[in-house]
Amino acid sequence: MRLEELLLENLSKDREADCYWWNGNWYTCGDLLNLVDNCENALRRAGFERGQRLVVMLKNSPLIPALSLAVWKLRGIFCPLNEKAGLSSLKGTLELLKPFAVILQNEIKELAVLKESWVCITCDLDAKDLPEFTGKLQEPDNEDFAVIFSTSGTSGNPKAVPLTHENFLSNCADTREVVTDLQKGHVFLNVLPNFHSFGFTCTMLLPFSMNRKIAIVPSFLPPQLTMRAIVEAKVDVMYVVPAIIAYLLMSVEKGKFPAEELKRQVYICTGGDRLNPNVQDQAWELLGKEIVDGYGLTETSPVVCMTPSHDRYKLGTAGILLPGYEYKLKTRDGQDLGKDSHEGVLWLKGASITPGYFHAPEITAERFDSDGFFNTGDYVEIDSDGYIKIMDRVTDIIIVGGFNVYPQEVEKILSEHPAVQNAIVVGVPHAINGEVPKAFIQRREGFLNVTDREIIKFAKERMAHFKVPRSIEFVDDIPLSGTGKVLRRVLREKAGHKGI
Image 1 (cartoon, rainbow, N blue to C red):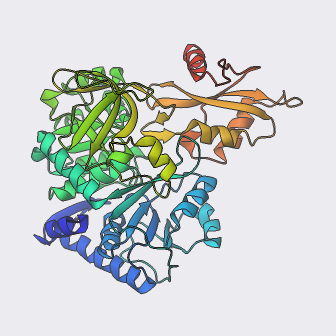
Image 2: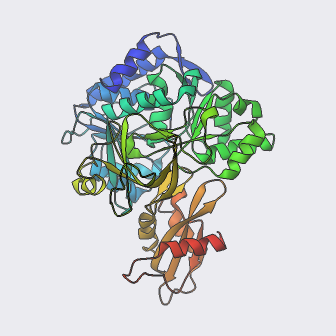
Image 3: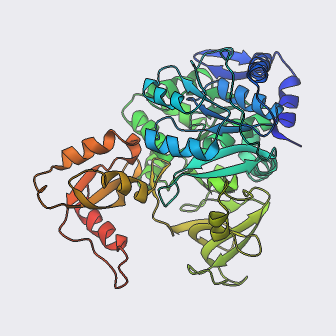
């Protein structure tokens, strides 16, 4: 089975039933099906064929599920991108994906330069159809691919993760089996960005696979839109990043949002980063219950483990492994620790895992072992009940409010400043976002008067806001190991003492 077969079957059961809330109004399953037909017909007229890739840079809106379904009906591949990833990053990603066309939001004028290399069309989030256009056919790719998610990779170079229809169907089915609380829910909050696998799967595909409704919010900022959706649409299932729940709890504490709206939720789960223990204390004090955690990666579609229900939550854990996975625990250098081990680097095998990185066999070979197990890059501890605790990230990725920031990408851009000789970026703790980037910079001779404000301004003009270092510390030397490797641990410790 393919995704469009399951979802269209569910939507067609009752065309008059409420399907999604958008801008203060409920729309029916029939409304979404009509939008799907309009998008499909527009893509056909544009020349879209099997195996083609459609890049979409839109905030959350009804167009996201409609375009996804339309692309899948035509046996194509949906490729959501973050329009705020930075022009340099987007150009590299588009060159990797080679899309048939790129759909942009009307207001993103700074991306108009992309039209020089790619077929680009613009539309607003309320559009009922796509404008007339003619796409450019590219080399077709695997029709089994449903979505390709893109990241910069730890090297700072574009990296793409294709996920198949089977990947998503398996992940949704296994999540439904494990998370018993979901059966009580009726309306899922759809506020996490669609270019993030967590948002795409857990707040769109998962509810639609269960015949549930969604409340669509373009983005969390401004937060008043999310609060309005929770109240008006009667949201009762929330998958969010820690920064969102932290803000909502702070609003409750300040009397700006009713506590009852969060108390009545049947399931609130955070992912994308660790939840600050202080936020859990606040949730217990204000709501009388804790917020549950989950864990996953883009490569796993994304859910790896999740807590079945609020009353089965174990503090500090991310829940239990979904039933579709086999796992191994290994040492950091890849040695198998055996079946009796309870702590190590987590390696996974199962139907939810990507078949490999897009047009990058060398990266695929690095992350999969000879038995087909995928290296998550995370060091975990598994207790006697099967609950998983994420102990540490093996990689140096910084997670800002659920978004991945790759230090080498930021360092590369900072190093383009004429005053910067060397830049090292590490994550430092932050009360709301979990972590934020901090840069240690060696200045070039003759540029000792450059200020941290100048460097930050330079960064803001070249990268997404969440990637910009919150603070700069100028140093004379960067600590190195005996083999010349940067000792990021030393810099993290230094940053932790001084803060930001």
